[in-house]
View (cartoon, rainbow over the protein chains, first blue to last red):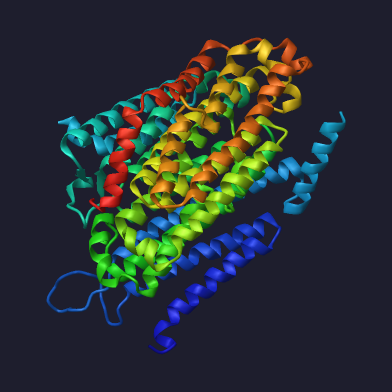
Length: 124
Length: 493
């Protein structure tokens, strides 16, 4: 139970926290999406790393090999990667549209613009 | 034999309808396909409910791979009921959507609306029916991604930011869920929910399993919009196209609550969920906070859709309160409120959509005096509002009756009072609409408005009537919810 036997978990948790921190702490919409991607990537590692056995091969029964790696996590994460790409693509498309509508991608400036529009709406 | 394949078809039909609509590229054809697909899903969901009632749990092996190796669809008393709710609301919203979406979305984007509506339906039905934890994540993301697109199709530019914020929060929620599932997979080596339930006993109480419980709870609560994780909900509901808001408000959060119930009672088991971590206390505090603070926030909105959205956050508190009570009456209240609040809120948002159709606004300033020019719409909103308050004879009352009974069964008078007191806050915000619509001098827009067209009114008032009907005849809703609560508490899957 040394640190190195849990190394992949440590990396997973570090990435997870770093990604989540960027999502929360940054006001730039693109940077938030980068953080979100790092956050999702950490999960890929969480699934895949334990599926690998040192010296393990692909799970093909041929008599010469006795130790197999688990292929299921790879398949699951392939799906999760597709989901992650779809999310990122949609997020970026939204940022493009937000930039067209507000001419900024800073969250606080967008909220200021909305508040200013609200005030004008009430005044009119 | 097609009846055998109903569990797959109820998801596959809307899933296939979506690309067909995109190929058709026309609003009218898209609408026809979406309506046909949602009506077909509704018919299949009803057939499944009847089958489950007659013959018990249905297990369907996708691709004939036997579970736990293949993906299993498993229908029991709980999810058959949720499935009927989701598909019924889709079948009501789809006919309504034609005129409403034509008025709110540019002509060249309308077919995309219908395609996304079908994807959301497929995703939500998939979450409800699947018996595989990872498959549930995939369906969660299918429905969520389509939801983000639909919200962004709203007219106001704020819809874009609302959609972006929901995308961030929703993805964090779904990722938390998948982390939890990953930890469970590491500990048990299985993803099939029934198999998980069987194997989790050996590792029960170990730290990864507790972490999984925490991750899944937080992830799904983000999707449920349980106070204080509701930040994304009000703007998403307010700026999405009206027809879709009605569908979303009636189904999306409800299906996530179903998923949470499934994990708590069927996978982790009641004792482990509420024994190891102070879940009961957490849910109790957050539910009561939602019931009071979110309802109070609803009172001070200057826009009908925002008011209804905050009211949704408050009403979710009732459902989670039933979970925290963790007894037969409380859970019956929760499950029956999934249905009752689903139809009530869908009716209210459909009627709000009818107001948008005529007035192009749901600001209270513009709604003044609308009770005179649009009497049926306004009357429908009052009926829906009374159901939110929980007036006897309304669907909302049935829920509160069971929640209060559940609280008394749990031995707490104080908790039994909370739904009653928070109803008074609901009365306050519903009264604001009544006062605006009936007792104020008509605004320029309201004076010029005509009653909404029949194609909008019939589905909306039909649901409003259902709020009254299910307040008197509770045999379907309470019967189904009681069976669902029994299944959950019995731990029988």
